Amino acid sequence: MKEARTQTERRVPRAPRPGAALAALAAAQFTVMLATSVVNVALPEIRAGVGLSDTGTTWVVNAYGLAFGALLLAGGRAADLLGRRPVLVAGLGLFVAGSVAAGLATGPGLLIAARATQGLAAAAVAPAALALAMSQYPSHAGRGKALGVWGAVSGAGGAGGVLLGGLLTQAGGWPWIFHSVALGAILVLVAVLILVPDAARPEPGRFDLLGTVTVTLALTCLVWGLTSARGTGWADARVLGALGAAALLLVAFAVIERRRPYALIPPGLLATGRVAAGNLLMALLGSVWIALFFFLPLYQQQVLGSGPLATGLGQLPLACANMLGAALAPRISRRLGVPATVTGALLTEAAGLLWLGRISAHGSYAADLLGPSLLVGLGLSVAFVQLTALAVDGVPRQDAGLAGGLVNTTRQVGGAIGLAALATLAGSVTAHAHQPAPEALTSGYRTAFLVSAAVLAATALLALLLTRRTRPAPRPVEAPGPAEPWQDRATDRSSVV
Image 1 (cartoon, helix red, strand yellow):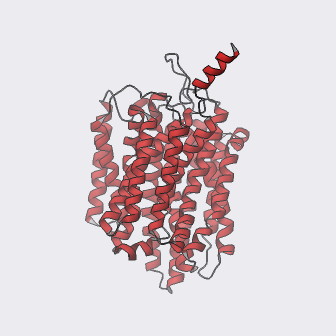
Image 2 (cartoon, rainbow, N blue to C red):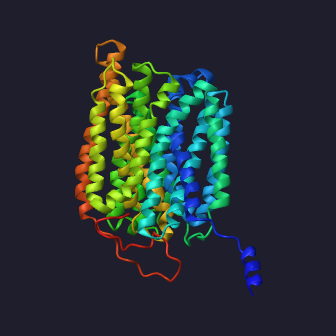
Image 3 (tube, rainbow, N blue to C red):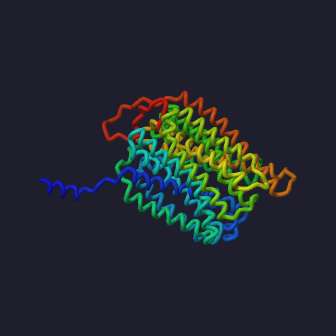
């Protein structure tokens, strides 16, 4: 009997542990976030290497963000209907191809197209990975730990991109930025194939093609208009045309969705108020988040005179603070409750940005950046973990990928809006400063950081109101089956993790 049982155990492979699966999925999220900022430090070298114009240089960054932000909802819905693991694997494969093409690019067109391909792939990877990660942890305590890991790698990805970009640009040249990302994505793909189980079958339903095309075009026009405004100004006819088209398409999308039996965004998805609150607050946080990793390297290089390597190493304290905050976020939330945790985290980050508003043209990294970077990293990570938890709380299993796509969309679109507005504001202040270049640039950056601090302070007040008023949804009546965290809606009022 014992021998027969041993043989049976040998024939049945052990399921991968949730921790190992989470590590592979978190690595996928880290890769996506890394690609957002990895080119920032290397832009001068990339421009010289492939002959980019001023506009083309901007689109090395914008092409990735545009494709990523515009296609996230479609990627999330595809993950629900086609299977989250297959969509994740396909997205990682496409990400590898886009990264290799970017590293081999010899002209502007190919490089920008390759960056757009990376963004398209990221739009499939991010929501599928988040949905799979949540499915590994049915309990609220386990989900809190998983979201802590998610917050750590998401924030560290942004800072790590600046660090890796600086190291590789100085050591081997800008193509190695993309080659290393491709190698990392290959390793992540192998880990996903080995460690992440394909337990959940695709959800029943049909793809809302009309709604998907409409909202994708709307987000494309919106993100394109906002990112273009940084270079051409808000009064440019093409910018105004793009923003007007985005508004009309979003209205059309709202009308279409009210009449679709398989709507891309089901009306019940936002019914609890917690999902809506999480997404609104995440958009406001994103408006400051992405701009932060844009302005910090510029100040270090253009004002303090740091090289790519020193600029990248300067992000390490922020990344470490981010990982520490993400690890502590579930414990803080259980002790203080969601309203106090989110509000305190946003105010902590606002305090760090207010401190950055005191930077000097003749300052130093230790005096001007180290302290505020620690505050920003701590506040950013705790806020991200809690807002992600709100944005996926109580979501039915069949909409898990869509919920992941939605919260990533709000962060990306919020980031595009914030970066466009803050870059335009900083440029305007610099242009009218009538000071030597370092002082003029510093004036622009100070203004951007101070406005960012004001935005986060207002967001903290809004968070205090919204998180106190929202309620978890009642548990739905569904057919018996294996429980997933998306189905467990009996969340305690004081904590979602």
